[in-house]
Image (cartoon, rainbow, N blue to C red; front, side, top):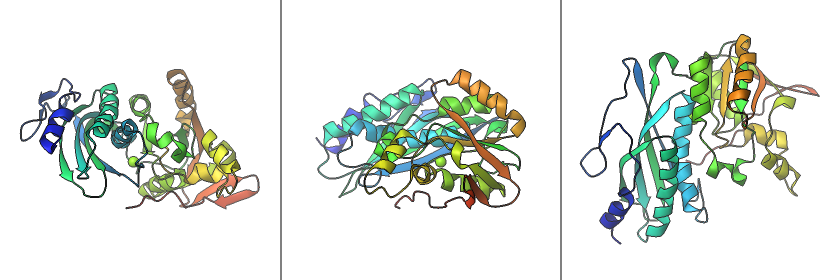
Length: 311
Ligand SMILES: [Mg+2]
């Protein structure tokens, strides 16, 4: 199969949505601008590379899922709605068309679930390994875009899900928290939000830096995943479960702050709306610009070492 045959095969089943006027096949895709006078666009691109973000053994559906899911998680973190995606494939010379079908099956499945149209892309030769770069366009009401820079002293800090040990599997099959983030943005004044890609400590650091504030976290409140607990018990484990939950990357959960006066209604509303997904208040924002972890043994500096992606 040559490249043109491959493109024809991959583009024959791409998900569309109501806004697509011209999909793949022309020089550019043509789409309707999002409705609403006060709507802004969100633009995001992200790449996954074989040997870095997945392995040659990873099922191809999960590779596609992860490549798009990372972008959708970022759109979620802004309180936005994803609309369109473009996919660039870096292909080794001896590409396996069936494997790529699987990659696209994963991409398409996730896109359909959130009504995201895959409107085009491109293939390039990338001699030694497969890579996938996905660009997503989303939208959000102008006055409801949630940045990292809005956290205020006294805010309650919340995190969704359970943290740590993602490399045991969660990083390949996570569900981007779009529904949860849109619900939050609609019903509450969320001061700052980020999705967890580098680890809780590192990503909280981005909010603190962006907002010019500090934080106090309660060690006993951090929701630790089963995978992190299991990994900490394994022989030769390098991290305690708590440290893993603070510093492991790729949880793709939401970390956000709201005024403490909103904290109880956020928790109550969330429990009714998303009973299957934990939401935990893990601490508060402080004026003093440092990150403290309160443990039974007393306050400690929050361990800074988040997961560092290769680049
Ligand atoms: Mg992010």
